[in-house]
Amino acid sequence: SIMQRVCAAALLHNGDTIINNPGECDDDLAAIEIIKRLGANISWDLEGKMIVKGNPSLGRSELVSDEIIELDCNESGLSLRLFSPIAAISSNQFVINGSGSLLNRPIGFFEDVFPLLDIDLISNNGKLPLIIKIGKINFLTVIKLFSKNTKQIMNALDSDKNKYEAREFNIMYFYGEN
Image (cartoon, rainbow, N blue to C red; front, side):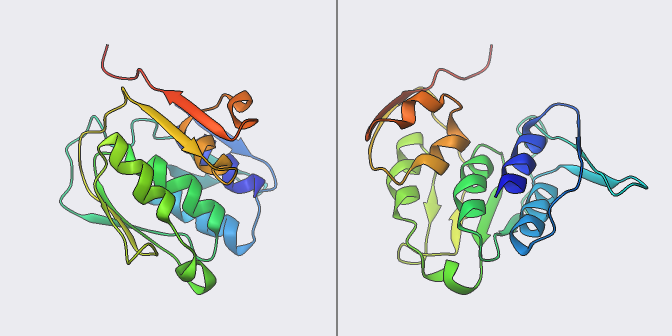
C-alpha cells in the first residue's frame, strides 16, 4: 500500500519523482496505470527505477476532453479510496471501476461527501462502477464526517494527520484561483 501512496504523491508532485524498487503486486500495478490515466508520464531507467513526471494540474488548466476516462482499481480498496477524490478534482469525466470483491464493497461515503463539494456522481446502487461527472468543485465548504473509516479518503483530501484522531471531522477548504 505504500507504493500506491507514493504513486499518488508522484502524480500530484510538480516535477520528477524517482521511485527505487517500485512495487510489482497487482495493487501497485493498478496504481501505476491509474496515475498514467490521470496524466503522469512514467518511464524506467536502466536500473529499474521508475521515474514519474507528475501532473499536479490534473487537466484543470487544459481543454476538457469529451472522453470518459476509466480508472481500474482492480481489487484495491485503497486505490478506490485514494484516487477517486483525486480524479474528482480534475476537469474530466471518469468511470472508476474494479474487479473481484471490490465490486461488492459499498461506496456510500462518496455518495454522501462528493455532492457536498458539488461533485456529480452516479454509482451502481452504492457500488462500483462510480461515474464522476465534470463539474465545478466547491472548495469553500465545511464537511462534517462521523466515521472512523474515512482515514484513507481524507488522506487524499487533506494532509493534516492530526485531524484523524477524532471521530468527527470538520474540514474547511479555501482553495481557488488567486
